[in-house]
Image 1: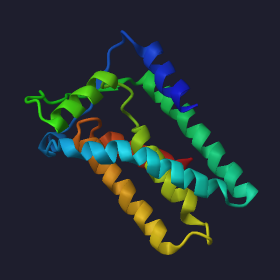
Image 2 (image 1 turned 135 degrees about the vertical axis):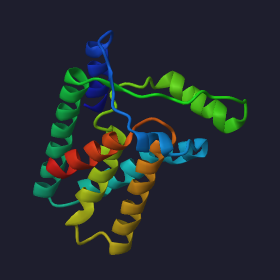
Image 3 (image 1 turned 90 degrees about the vertical axis):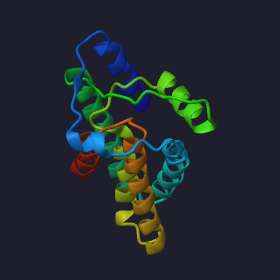
Image 4 (image 1 turned 90 degrees about the horizontal axis):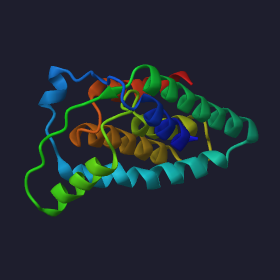
Length: 175
């Protein structure tokens, strides 16, 4: 479902004008290549939390995964109707982190940015655990902390801008 929304929208919107919604605040955020560890590490975070969420009572599970699917439909609509892009830094050097970011940039074009699926899914992980009494409070706090780290990594890697992050969080809350 995620791939259909992300790649399908990219295919449909290819060749169309993409809006750059960067702000002066985005330009002030430092570029931090090592946050790539967080950016890719979130896949493990998502997997663990989605498994924990799937272990809840049936009604909660259905509500969560329905909201998750709806969120991708909304993302697809935004990606097609309001395609966005951003400005990435010039990568200078051949150290490990620069090479890794260079590979990320080659693999993942600066498209389909608003709302950020990385931020959406990270916040969905927190929301899905919110009402689950079987999950310890400390783990819920750790999940929130990891979600915030994911938000920071998307900004520090120039994968997203502030409004993309806010859009992902807001969409998670709405669905």
